[in-house]
Image (cartoon, rainbow over all chains, first blue to last red; front, side):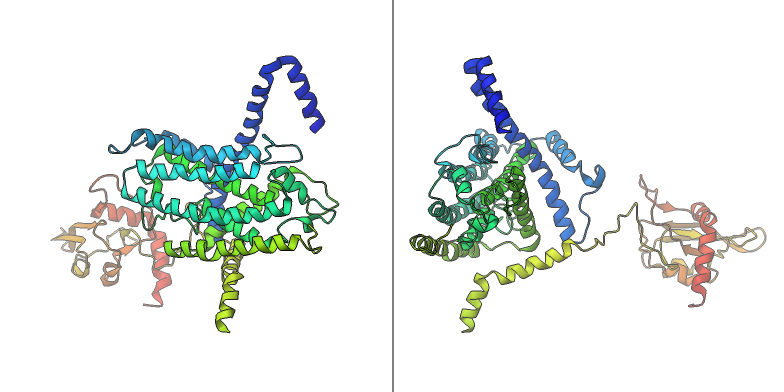
Amino acid sequence: MMELLNTLEKAGVDLLGPVWLPLWTVVKILVIVLPIMGGVAYLTLAERKILGWMQVRPGPNRVGPWGLLQPLADGIKLLLKEIIIPSKSNKFLFLAAPVLALTPALAAWAVIPFDEGMTLANVNAGLLYILAMTSLGVYGIIIAGWASNSKYAFLGALRSSAQIVSYELAMGFALVCVLLAAQSMNLGDIVRGQKSEYGLLGWYFIPLFPMFVVYFISGVAETNRAPFDLAEDESAIVAGFHTEYSGMGFALFFLAEYANMILISVLTSVMFLGGWLSPVPFLPDSILWLLAKMSFFLFLFLWFRATFPRYRYDQLMRLGWKVLIPLTLVWVVVVAAWMQTPLWVW
Amino acid sequence: MSKLFNLLKSFLLIELLQGLSVTGRYFFARHITVEYPDERTPQGFRFRGQHAQRRYPNGEERCIGCKLCEAVCPAMAIKIEIAEREDGTRRTTQYDIDLVKCIFCGFCEESCPVDAIVETRVFEYHGEQRGDLYYTKEMLLANGDKHEAQIALDRASDAKYR
């Protein structure tokens, strides 16, 4: 696989010269983005199906066999719907907000290592880039809430910004533990640091188990998913930040939310579950392992939504500031101390 | 001590895991949805659907115009006019049921001394214009002719409980 890519690259440079690099990069971006978009579409179906099964009902099953064409039908419906722009909204920001929500969710994929050497941009500060991108996504939400000029949207945006600020900290501290363990900010090196002859025993979720849990909980909060979906809290503030959006604007927020879910799932797999590494020594490492781990976390997202009632706002803040952040702070010290002892075997 | 125990319990997310296990169990449970146009639930012989007027086997209509159904109808959905027929019997000239008003309580059926007005098992019908659900005597009789076999069977099944 890699040899083939290398020969292709060499042939391309010989053939096209300076044009080759941008062209090749665009091809690589498409190879990453298109499956994500397909994944997002079918994640919406998976969500409805899984929620349905957990509620002892079949879920969508009318469009195509087992409802498999449902995402297509939804997409066409949303495309054909009228886009209504509130007359007193800030029109430029109102239209820019969905784009601002979606772009960071996709941009963050640039540094994700899919397999050995399969990264779009092998950045050394990849982790910082990820943190920056995942927190940028909330600007879309804030701007949407503000530009709509609607009280519900505004409340949703306020909640979302406070929530992201609180949970970003816990998330960052959890990642500091990963940094300590891996001694690198390069996501590829983080995965390589988890390689051992004992398969899954070498992965960071064992020494960093509390951080693994904290990271995933913060990730759920970061993506505004149930039980942390206060930003769109439909029982209290209509639809939160996207109250005023219709048609494709709404669809873009939807895409952004699901792309973020996939991103958080992949990140959790990369940081704590050894990315593309195989859990047992006798099976080869492959991108399929990454996909399997990602699917597991995506299932957890949906399982949480089917199980937990929404947090009240003060409970959300309490959990973030008084439970998760102190816990991460303690564990950073524990890990740092642990690493100085011979007991650290990772 | 119990405080410590509670702290431990919430830190280990035990209650959350219990909740997850409940939904996890139901994930594998058979779904109970009846996928209506493809699947149907069974109907009882006392099912109260659309109304019908019955006839005797010789073709004579059963209704004698006693107006008991009109009197008992709580929604006042029935309108009856009567007159003497040439042969001297008492018959209805008009027997209308407004299905929009009807609440399908079954009192008309119960009050009828000659089992003339009955409710059938038909529940899938609709009206496209105002007045489409205003059923006249002819429509009710036609309904009865159409479903007589089922109606008679249902009355026979119910007979021993009456």
